[in-house]
Amino acid sequence: MRIDLISAVPQILESPISHSIVKRAREKDLVEIVIHNLHNYGEGKYRQIDDKPFGGGSGMVLKPEPIFRCVEKLKSERSYDAVIITSAKGKLFDQSMAKKFSLFENLIFICGHYKGIDQRVTELTGAEEISIGRFVLSGGELPALAIVDAIVRLIPGALGDGESALTDTFIDEDYIEPPIYTRPREFEGLKVPQILLEGDHSKIKDWKDKISSES
Image (cartoon, rainbow, N blue to C red; front, side):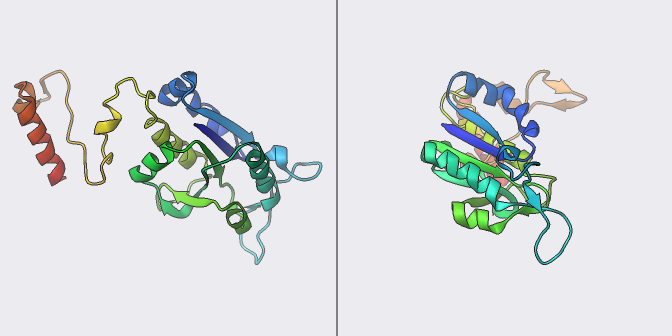
């Protein structure tokens, strides 16, 4: 899989993809992640990428030309399964989307910034707007990173324990992972449920299913 991230502030993206599961997946060549600085596609001497909104209002809007140039260049080099814009007004991201995207070959993420992105970018690129929640952040970089992390961990071989992703909360639409415990058996007067200590895996599974269904 290849993931291209287009951003006005690419520095935000660099550290998170260089650690933990995403880093290991990159080192195993399970995923290639390429960051593109939108300023490299900006206009004029100062590489302008934003301008004031038509109709008035506060803030600045990312111009369509730089983003479109970057997307078109990438599309000329390979085919993409989807172009995604991170936006607070987009469709809410969930585990089913993560599973769908993890099966794709190539993805483009356009990170919104400032007041937002010129609407014509969405229309001309056929992008899908996706949100991680009904709240506003300073930019789309953090949502893009959250979505990328959710996708990458589902790629076979990305996790050290092959069972981990299979038992994640929301891996099935109605499944909520039950409480988990480790040593010590008692902490601050709270004990680990006895059933988890008895070694009867059939009963443990029934207990977990019951807890999940009640959540």
